Image (tube, rainbow, N blue to C red; front, side, top):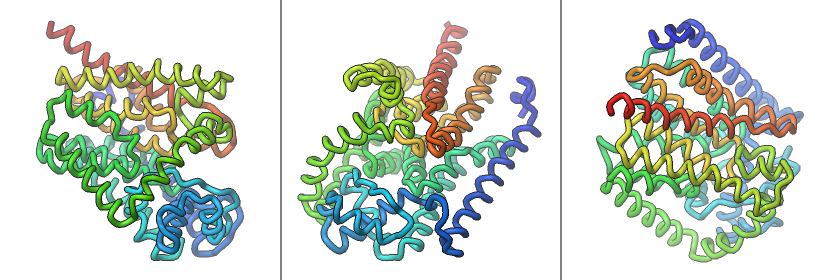
Length: 396
């Protein structure tokens, strides 16, 4: 922790903040879960509200077929059976994710939610354990106390699963490129988050991982088609434009929960075309930064950081719980600090990144749109690129 101390951040302060964050998240989630699932008290928001949609889609698939998950009437009837759930949650995921959810539909909602949360936390913990290997204990605690974990668990979302897949896809590249490609393919449960991985792998000349990811993604889609039927894909493709128009382009009730440039532009009064232009003005340079760092063989930690940040920044539709991905640049920059010290500004950005999932969650809860996360991610990506360029200037 010498680096932190030299920049005015004592290890004791990092440990205290990390333990405080871990304690708060654990106590809040434990009390919330006890309140709803053990004492069966229904005041306040339901813990795992988004998992209601997942569980209901699995139940509808088992009872009526996969294509019926896109029927608002049928899906809402199943969601209403959970209780304490007042608004319909639409299904907007591909059959690949639906296939993975089907086993959870065999259990009651409470049991399924517990199993889903445990599975997400377990794979995330495995990925995090590998990612923090070699860091000092205060850094490990800092990573473990990251606020995005509690937010993802509270929402009942798949963010911990996709974060673990992204971590595996990068951390295993050199030791096991086939398994790394399999992890990329696992992002088929939320394919928009995989959009920059082929670019990064191609620029990094990771051909085995790229080929494995394509093969496994095709296999995953083939199995989903064989089990759920081709009509599941047909209905899904037909449903996407209406979902995008209703919940993304004109979904004013969702913009506060979307930490994207597109949503910020729409909240500011921009038209849909103007918001897409604003999104492109950030998304295209973000993708270019990812390609540049992977093409020029930058330090591994910087490449992974840029890929995670770029993936989030290119999305016009991204929800606050997806900010769990920010654990990757946080951990990678803590590693990179052993090679090149983090400046005071970079430490501030890492700290802000550590906190923004909680800030976004609170902003949504109080219906107060404030997309600090977007600004922080842009600034952190700029810092990542600058760290690489600084080394090149010193060497050149």
